[in-house]
Amino acid sequence: MENKTIITVALTGAVTPKELNPYLPLTPAEIAEDAFKCYKAGAAIAHIHMRDAKGFGTMDKELFKETAKLIKSKCDIVINMTTSGDNKATDETRMAHIKELQPEMNSYDAGSFNWMPMGVFMNTPQFLEKLAQVDLDANTKPEIEVFDIGMIHVAEYYIKKGLIKTPAHFQFCLGILGGSMATLEILLHMKSLIPPGSTWSAFGISKGHIPILYATIALGGHVRVGLEDNVYYSKDVVGSNVQMVERAARLIKEANRQPATPDEARQILGLKGSKNTNF
Image 1 (cartoon, rainbow, N blue to C red):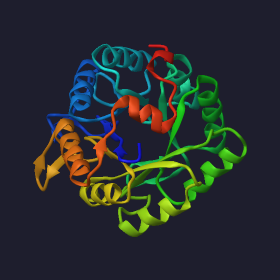
Image 2: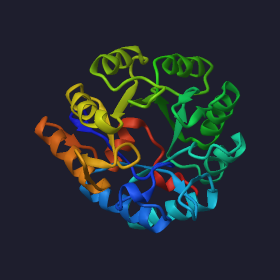
Image 3: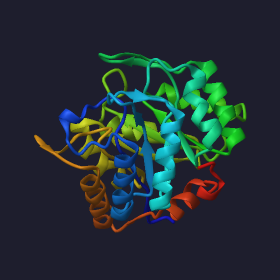
C-alpha cells in the first residue's frame, strides 16, 4: 500500500451557506449523491456534517442515520462522521450518533481554540476522554484533527492512557484563523511530531488549499479536499466536490501514486469495515 494515497472529501461542513456555492450539498439526499459521485471520482472517505432545515449545522442523529443509509445504499465509501458543527450541542449530543450508529471513523478534535471570528471551538479534556471511550466501545477509529501543534501532545496523552489505539491517524487542519497557518514549514513540523507508525493527512483552507495539497502529496501523506474547506476551484471560480476530488486524483497519479479505494483505505487505517456499523 506504499503507493496508495487516501482522498477524503469533506462534503459540506457546518457553516458555509449555499449562497456562496450552489454546488454545496445540504440535505441527506444531496450529501449522499455527492458522496457517490466523489467515490466514483476517487474518494475513499466521505467526511460528513449535517444541516438543519435552515441550513445550519446540527448534530441530529436521525439525519446522520438517514444520510449514512443513503450513502451505503449507493457505494461502500468509508463514512467519517463529525462530532462538531453545532455550538449549541452538549457533549452527549456530540457523541450520541457515534454511540448508536458506530461508524468506521469520526472526527476527534484534539483541543480548544479561538476560531476567529466565530468564537471558542470547545473540546474540553472531559469531552475528549469521554469521546475516546465511546470510540473504543464502538470500535470506531478517531481521526485526530490537529489545528495547532499542542493538539498532537494532547493526542499523545490519550494514547499513553490507552484511550486511543495505535497506530493513530492524524488530520492536519491548516489555515484556520486561530489555528496554525497553512505553510510548508508548519506541515513539516507537525509531520515530524506525530508518533512513529502513525498515518496522517492534511488540508489547507481557502488559499492554503492548493499549496498544502501539493505539499502533502509530495511528502507521501493522505489528502482531504472538499467544499467544507474551500468553495473555490480556482481564483473567483466556484467548484464542486467532484471537481476537487478529480483534481486530487490527477495530482496523485502525476506523482506516480494511485488513489486508494475504500477497501485499501480500510487496510491502511485498520478500520473495521462497513458491515460492522449500525446503519
